[in-house]
Image (tube, rainbow, N blue to C red):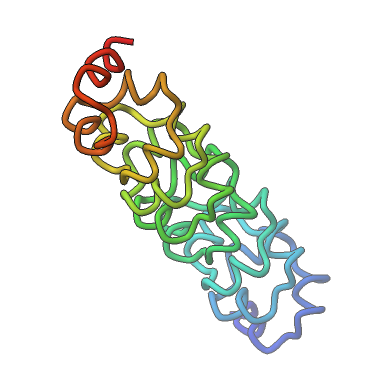
Length: 194
């Protein structure tokens, strides 16, 4: 029962005197959260300990990008990480694989959505609002499937952000005829063929 006294030790004592094995095995959640410095949490804790024992504040504040990317499960990243942490600390692989739709839609900045999300993630995980607002012209043109452009993009987005190739290839006749009212019918048929 000697290890129970760890809860009464200061941060310096735990950091200096305890081996990684001891911290991972013997420390309660409250001890790791309260007494461990960022260096100790990042270096000494196994993935299981970080995922199970660390509060949101500790993961967000104390964990390095490498630790969050490597050691955190999907549920931990989705639940415990703030927007700034996901945007700054997560690699493309982690965002694409570990983040749920709600997290990408809510927590990811435009830069992250545009840069870090694969075509599959943008098409599947992003709501209409996110696709329209957060994606640059290049991303919509390259990463979005016809279904997503037709369904998720507003008129202004299609008109402004889509190149001629994308509009003619990816948009259904209904979308083109509805969203481009200034085009006459003969021009519209020619436009679709091209």
